[in-house]
Every structure is written in structure tokens, then in C-alpha cells.
Amino acid sequence: MMEIRPTELKDLPLVMEIYDYARAFMRANGNATQWIDGYPSESFIRQEIEDGHSYVCTDEQGEILGTFCFILGEDPTYLNIYEGAWLNDEPYGVIHRMAASGKRKGVSEACLNWCFEHFENIRVDTHRDNKVMQHILTKYGFQRCGIIYVKNGTERIAYQRILAL
Image (cartoon, rainbow, N blue to C red; front, side, top):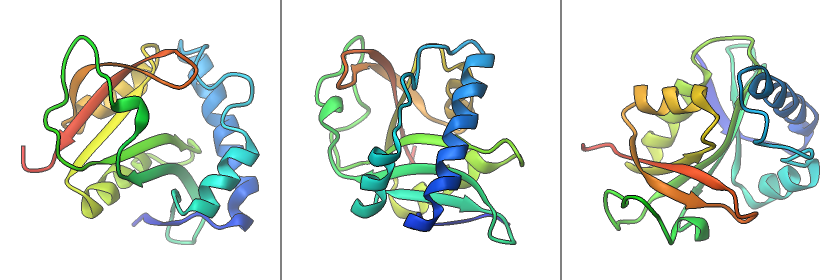
């Protein structure tokens, strides 16, 4: 059974390897423009760890299989949504930068389940070319809500799932 725990600074090298793998996986699957120029950087992830927003998914032996960011509270990039609307205006949790090592199936499901154990209203966004993530989100019951723009001005597809729905 996989477990989720807060990322520790000692995990940073393995977490960065997972992001390297995820970038290569995205490129190989038709998503060549997301997470470019070394994003997310080591310093960025280090700050997320220090802020308490970074988590890892581990196997029974403690091997890190995946990572993600989970924040309770408003995301400034979600204030304006286009070509649609959020399902509600209630407080929500946000998932960002979910990535898996590719060593085992079910990592995304474990991460999403953990998030819903901590909050029932979750928002997430992904790149238009990230068909794998779009499939995961749809399979897991997220509804496409519209389009948002991230800090660098690029478009993302916005999703939301309310556990009670």
C-alpha cells in the first residue's frame, strides 16, 4: 500500500529525478511545451518543501514513487476563469506539479485519494497537451470547468471535483 508523507529536504534529489523523468515522459507523449526550461527548479521545490506544500508518495519500503504539491487556500491564477465557471465558490485545495517515477502504477490515484482525505473540494489545472493528466482527472471524476492562465501567461485547462458530487 502506498503512503503519502511531507517531502523532506533529504528527499530533494529523488524528487528532482522524478520531475526529470516526468518531463521526458511528457515530451514522449506529445506534451513538449509544459515544464520547460528546467521547471520546476530545485530552488522552487526546496521552497515548497520549506513551506510545507510538497508531498511524496512512497511504497511499502519507503521508496519514493511520486511527488505533488497540495495547498489549502486560494490560488491567484484561479481567480479568473474563462470559457466556463468553477463548480462552486467554496474554500478549496489545489494540486500542482503531480509527477510519478514510472516504477509502479497507481501513484496518481494514491495522491488524489490522499488529497480528498484532507479536503473535499479540489481544483487542479493541466496543459492542453497533457492528455495523460486530462485522462487521469476525468477518470477520477474531475469536471472540466474552463480555462485559466498561469503566471507566465500560458493557458491551462481547469478542473474541479467536489467529493459530494
